[in-house]
Image 1 (cartoon, one colour):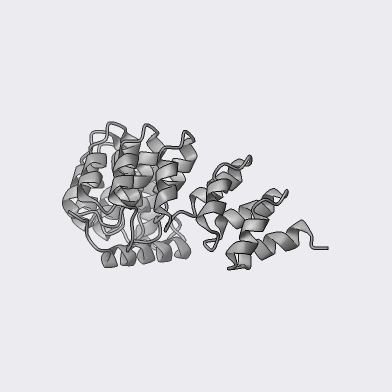
Image 2 (cartoon, helix red, strand yellow):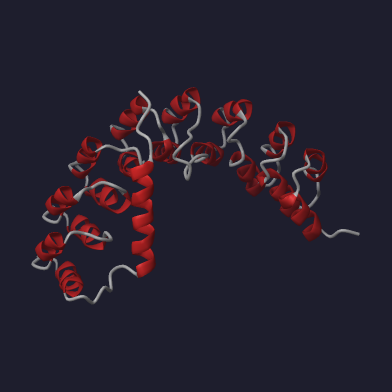
Length: 258
């Protein structure tokens, strides 16, 4: 007789919607979770799992809505905040796709800051993005920096934002931008935390390190001098490689829809 582990493996690997429909009512949460995560599950099965008693199963179902416009509308209206966040992140790693415009607009106006932050990262709609770029909550504005479609003018608004948290996040999360000229200005930022973020940015221009080597903050200065001397103890090779990959991805991303 198959164990729950066997059923969970089958639910994760099968492309048979009928099998998934049956396993979607399994008593084991791990099996239902695997069903909820499987793109081959039909809309009826995923809809049922969006109301599952286990939160992890509901969340898994909410991440499986890429080609389910009817269920996207259901989740937009869900009272469960983290399901709306999951929906907003549907195309977090897919720059060639985004949610339908009406869904994005609804998420842009969501009361939960995490939802607005996530759609700021993923939207391909210029008006949606620019609305979020001016959001009252600094966390939302900051996450705009991670959208690969961002322009230099958009980034300029972030690196000159009134709050240091936004400026620091822009340095850390931005892909193509901030560019070298913006980073040189940020190396003189009034916030030591922003200057630290510049120091920690992979492939930061040497001129920025030279500025921070004379920083009034001793930790900043010490680490900048170490980088200039070739110690390379701020970022690992893996971190630098990943950052370069993200920047290459941003270079390939299409611009915003107008």
